[in-house]
Image (cartoon, rainbow, N blue to C red; front, top):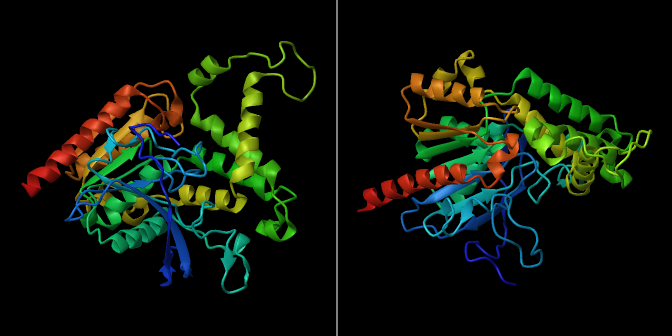
Length: 383
């Protein structure tokens, strides 16, 4: 297999098992769980060059590279992480962790509940962003990493990075939050609930125990993904890609597919229902809804961030209406009010929320320049 010289190449995930119970924010706990982990680059002698990448809703630990038996399965942020890329694996040791409750190898609803010998299904405990961060910290402990050079994420991953800065202020030097928000708006919660209702009311859901019925709530998953995907794109981006183009060139005068955008959304929904778990979708969207670090400080975000010690890079995209630039500016204002060092960039990109995953040179150059600063800082301290 040939790989690009700017790729981390063939990668192999690792399974980290934890026997000790993990207390959850809900009051429940989970023990005997596994987290899937991938690493890229080399950890230096004093373990100071580690970068944690936190993933968004439908991503995983597979951040970069390819698998030997799946040459087309490229990591979801491969354009960001690798030799000579913005997060340069010639300089940094990068860690990707699949969150608890996911469906890509880490313990989740489809796995066996040791207490019953059956899949957890709907009995898997509700998890929060803070629970994920606590679990990630245990992975860092396994590597002997006391402090990350940076914790970074986009969208839901950005929420995790922000939570890291609050929960473990001494364990990260830099916090990089891209296309994210300090909490969901009522509109975002509404979108999530409509998507969940599509799954919960699917006859094949069986109260979350569909595994025992050898069923998959595909219809609900399709609709959930279609709703989500609409919110990831901008109106301009959809207009440019699809406009009002007809699939067959003429109106069909029925309720099937007339427009190209309908065909695209159904394709995305079908693909999603083939690989994503319905219970995981419910869990992750609830974690999104619940995230609100300012809740602990009476709604005062500046007070919540006052405990942080990291330096921050906050970035947003002008056409992102799911997590708009105003939400990023809210984080920036709170950091400034708390006298925390912060760099902010608002990038004029047409791609909506998905822009944080795409190849915009201004965006990638921004991140690369910031990591140059981190590298220079590390080298200055070791000189």
